[in-house]
Amino acid sequence: TGGDDEGGGDEEPAEQGGGGAQQGELDPPNPMILMQGILDKLKILNYESEFAGEQMNGMLVHQAYFATPHPKPNEQFFYFTSLFAWLMRLNRFNFPRPDQFDDPNTTVANVMDALRKARVAVDYPPAKVKQGCGEAVTVILNLLCDGALEKVGFRMAPPVFPPDSYPEEAPVDEDEEQVSADIADTVAPVEDADDDDEDEVYVNKPAAGGDKGAGGK
Image 1: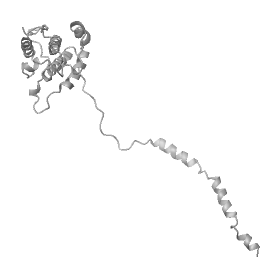
Image 2: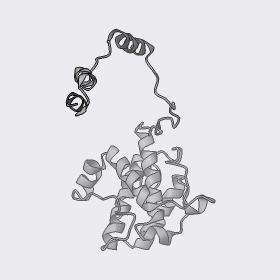
Image 3: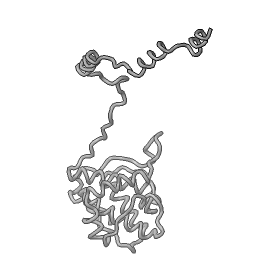
Image 4: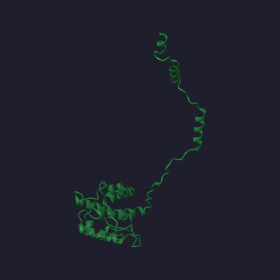
């Protein structure tokens, strides 16, 4: 029994997007990178208390949870389908939470049917979604997170980067430069007294042995 939307089919789609087959010549989505964004968006949606705390006994996911296979694949798949059902409700579409012991083929068929009804454009075979991790799963969760954030009125601001062009030389304060020049003009150069005394000694000192030899004649 797939997810019939609560609005009778008149709701806006959760998000328009696509899977790896719709990326054209672009690189396919990276599940590890997607998971970082998914986790940030889930925290904004208060999934820690409203989903994990209420439905998953407080179990939280880490940044690689849906990016790589889990040692307990049934647990991972159940977490994915439970999170999927919660995000669908935030997108104003009804999708009953599957039981952990439901037939996974039936559950995946219901997930794919719900995505079509919500007009979430993904192009992955059911077998990829059944894995409970990887590109298909992270793309679906990312799109549903974006749709849920839009429903609650949250907008992700684009990043702002500083300009790459910098002046070759630092600007010079003309007033400060003039004050420095005035100070330099008023300060007289200091002569080294020791140097003057040393010069005087060399000037007045008789040549060594010269006078003595002359007096002895």
